[in-house]
Amino acid sequence: MLNDQHILRAFDRDLESVQAMIMKMGGLVEAALADAAKALETQDEALAEQVRRGDAAIDALESDVNTECARLIALRGPIAGDLRTVLTVMKIASSLERCGDYAKNLAKRSLLLGTMTPIPGAAGSIRRLARQVGLLLKDALDAFIARDPGLAEDVRQRDHEVDQMYNALFREFLTFMLEDPRNISACMHLHFIAKNIERVGDHATTIAEQVIYLTTGALPGEARPKADLTQDGLSTGGQG
Amino acid sequence: MKDLVMETRVDVQTVKIEARKAQVFYGTNHAIKDVDVDILDKTVTAFIGPSGCGKSTFLRCLNRMNDTIASCRVEGKITLEGEDIYDPRVDPVQLRAKIGMVFQKPNPFPKSIYDNVAYGPKIHGLTRNKAELDQVVESCLRKAALWNEVKDRLHAPGTGLSGGQQQRLCIARAIATSPEVLLMDEPCSALDPIATAQVEELIDELRSQFSVVIVTHSMQQAARVSQKTAFFHLGNLVEFGETSQIFTNPRDPRTESYITGRIG
Image: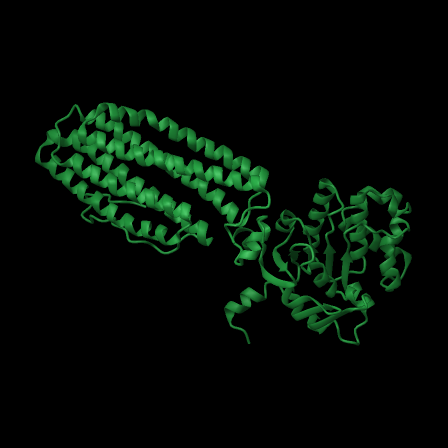
């Protein structure tokens, strides 16, 4: 029934158009994250530079989504499922824009890290984390397009794994810093990178929650597993 | 009798009109099927649905306007404060003084503005003298947000007013008998947006004293003025709930299809 078309077909075209923009943004963000992590591991300055510049396109798309949604609200007066679609689209766009910023930040730091003593194994671990988070993001967006609350719930649960990977990296960097203070600069940058990727995972969770709101009309209420740990006071752990 | 949770939920607003398994037949045509609905006091309830879904038919059951149609038969139970309104001992004229009605097109009597409002209280003998009647007329015109516009020409014909003013005059006339419930059948469909906004503002104010039931084709109007919404389709009451819920998260796919303007 929900897939039925509007009597006014321009309304359908408008709704499809904003959702297509989200998918385009999602594609750009996934690529930016993967490319930035790759640039870090391979020390590919050109690729890092490309990611850094590419963020402008993501920002521009977010602004287009907001303009288009404002127009849609003003002209079409969406209600019920249509209203939830528009609200969800706006929230997802804002999440993706943040994710784009994190990828850009990763690229910038990878350029800086090129000038420092390399930390063995770190870039590979970061790339694995980025790959895991990229999958979460992809699944969250697939759940949005398919209107699949089951897949969205799966994404929420899997953010736990990302938090654990981040916590492991945190401890690893700490060890390097304790071993040799000359590692501190590089490890600080690597830690920010890991933290930012972990935050992209949180945004994927936010998107998944929006999908649950979109499909069921209510945000998921109960808590999901969190890996906010390291009770020793040394670590902050994953958030959100 | 009731546990605490029920009490806080139910007793906030008392039920004014209660319909149970209401059926309406026009000859052999089953126009309303098994409608159960509670119309709350001091609440605006909107009836929405496509043309021919039975919302106006059901509205007209609530003050026995369907009595005037020979082929029309009403079954089931409709009560006003617990009293069966289809009880043979109930006088439909008295009932309609308690349950007033405003129609789609403004239909003032071809009389003065004053007489339009004074008519009901006069025939029902609700006032004892001219001074009291004057007071009722003024207070009703004030409640209908028309007083300031007509106070200097109370004896001019009601038909000389603008469409929006005429509709507000009809509302003033409907509330002059101090009804408990006000039924409105598309009260704004013949009005421009400004007059519509004035009538909507009025409906919102009337809510503090009356129970209002409004039939409307404008989804946005239902969303703007009502607290409860009932969606009718093919003679069935498909969904009845809080207006905010119906318009953000309707439970029935037919409601969603209709209110979002899809082919249902």
